[in-house]
Image 1: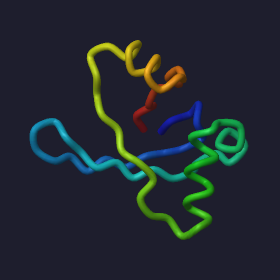
Image 2: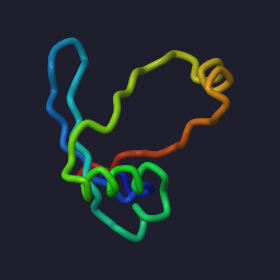
Image 3: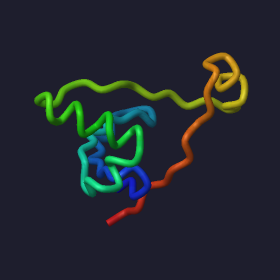
Image 4: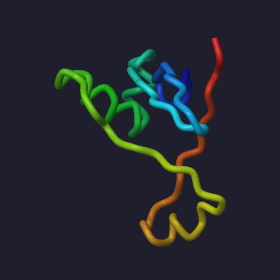
Length: 79
């Protein structure tokens, strides 16, 4: 679960530390306040489908500078 974003996730582990993550809204009021939750809710309302992809980096600062935006801190709560 991603409490800050009002979403929950399901993980399908693959090899080499990679995985597929399926995300849906869990708590609509929280999802309505968070940009990620809003994007997930909007995609779900459109029938679902591919939303995006994520990569891991050792230092996020240069990526933030290049994109002109900062990361959104969050965490996952295991059930």
